[in-house]
Image (cartoon, rainbow, N blue to C red):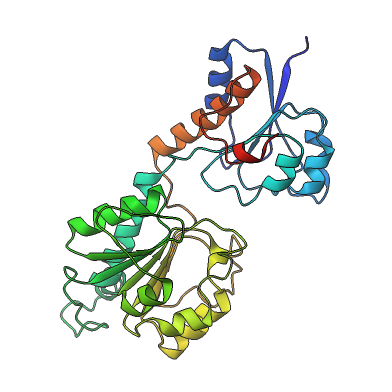
Length: 323
């Protein structure tokens, strides 16, 4: 039979040596290609129509694209979240959607704690102050409160949220959490979202992007937070209403924010959230490490190998929807 055709729709790395090595070790005859028309509207369809498997990072895999697939056996995501893939359409087509559920748990939870410490200890404005030659002059910020004893509110208790809770408690923080699907989590007190927002000194978002969580944090939720509290978003940009966040910051309804994700990525050069001294922004890089990058590529490729070998991958997000 002809080789299996596996298409990488898009990926940050320019090469695909890791994936190719996984496929070579499997003993399967696989033709691995990279799509070139991801950014052109309608362009991707012609390159993936006859694919036996897709490896997807951020490309939008719409119902129309899924309908055009003539022999696809699996869609494997480079990551945990699958909001860029229409899972319902894939399920109707009988296509498993696989992810890498244990990707970047340590990295994102560590960056969350890093953000929290930077916000608490005023690290970034004090760094700017010293580099401006102002050592010895009055600092541009108020003294921080002692971190131990403050309250961290975690929204979303998946693997990353739970790892954040463990690390936060090691710093002496009290941890409360909101997740309507979680029964319990060691070291955190489950509360309603309203109570979390009113109680927390730091609100950290770790929920997936779904129709229920889109704009979960809007004007009303930001107004419910303490004026001394900070918002951290390491989930997906659209979980936060960006306009409402800017308004809340300008009005002093919250003290600041730390964002690894934005609703539009990359943000426009004139984005009003950029350049604000009360906002830390990183380029959707919280998941980044040498180890996580290698693991991600291996495991996403292994999902494809499993399906083409007649096995189900270890994590199929729509397993219960497949006929």
